[in-house]
Length: 306
Image 1 (cartoon, rainbow, N blue to C red):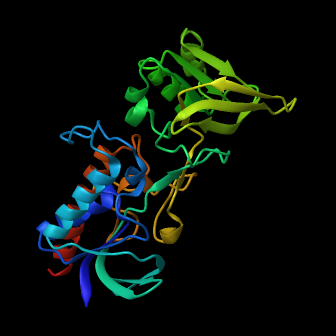
Image 2: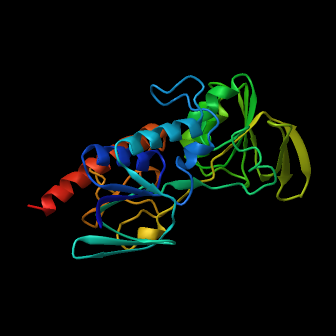
Image 3: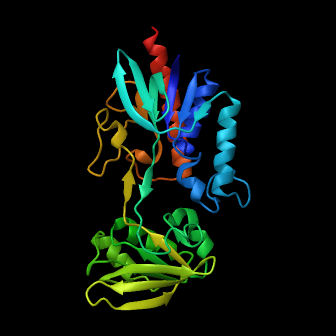
């Protein structure tokens, strides 16, 4: 049996691609190694997705997306892709359990925010530890937050967080920031922002939610605790693109480069969501990517039969 579209990844981009593919009467399969939702499934509350329910959690929104795709006929398997080949216009995919064939493939494998790797980070993820200021900044109104990182993203997001937090403490492991000078100047002129350089986060503590952050000076080894209600981590992303690296072009970090139709270098192979090189990685941009990729895949398949 040959599927019209196989989607690798069951986050918002993949689930949306499944919905659009199935609604177009394409035989569509989503292969996801974990639970549906991707990173959004670890988000405590989602209030910046248009039309979402009040106090909608990430897992609830992800399940609604999955249920909607399934209702139109999308198939879903919980397996891990091990190998992809293309021969005579057909893609051959091998997982840890089965083998599949498809006329088109949509890569929606996402990316992972790089972790600090400190004690308490995983335990407080979604309970004060965040990797997205746009997603979660609103919940820290009048509170104190720590921003980890010294690049453009960290400084830009730190400035953004001053719209809500009463104090933003930017912690960077080096003695100077890597962000653009214009951003640095803007941040240093903001009275809500404090900088602590030559320092790393050693531990995140709290009782149910974050309340204390232990910092370590990398030069002296000195440890000190500071009070904080949240920790925002901006030390880069790792795209999950290794699986298809021979089929696509990537940037220097590894994000897949696709055109406005989500097409990659390989005909029939499309990209969607956070694994794609783009400016904004949010649920709303992921679902847009997924819709475009599915419509483009449908057009590609129709062209094959001409």
